[in-house]
Length: 186
Image (cartoon, rainbow, N blue to C red; front, side, top):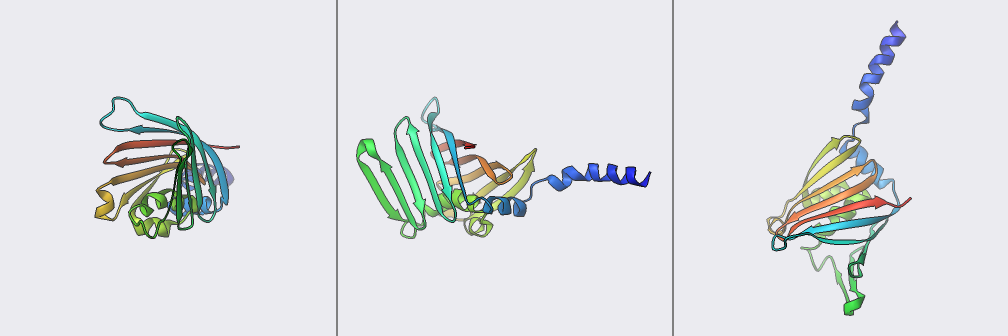
C-alpha cells in the first residue's frame, strides 16, 4: 500500500518537476555547441496589407557565431561572429561589415538571439528585462529592452522553445511584427 501511494505521489509530482525553468533552459541551450535549422519568416508591416515572407537556413556555432542565410525571395546572408557583423546581398553587390562595439544600437537585437542560443542569461539581462514561463511541453521567454533608446525601435522579443531548442522568435517594433519559425535540422 505504501509503495502504491509513493508511486501515485511521484506520478502526480512528475509534471511539476518536468516544467521548464529559466536556469534549466539556459543550461540546455548552453549544452548545444552547434545547430542547423531551416526557417520561414513573415514580416507584418503596418503599411502593407499582407506579410512579407522569406525562407532560408540558420546556423549556430558556440560560443558566438550565428548565421541567417535567406534563400527566398532574395539571397541575403547575415552573419555575426564575435564583435563582427556581416551583411551580404549578392544580387545587389552589397557587402557591409561593421563592429558591434561601434554600433551599440544593433547589439541588443543580435544578443536577443545569440545570447539565448548560448544559454547566457547574464548577457540577456544586460539588455533586457526577462520573463520566463513554461508552456505545455516547452517554454516562452519575453524580453523587454531596458534601454529607452532601444525601446523606441524594439518593444518586445518573444522566444518560444522546447528543451534546448529555440522554435520561434517574434519581434515587435515600430516597423511591425516579425515571426521567425524555426525547424531544427535532423
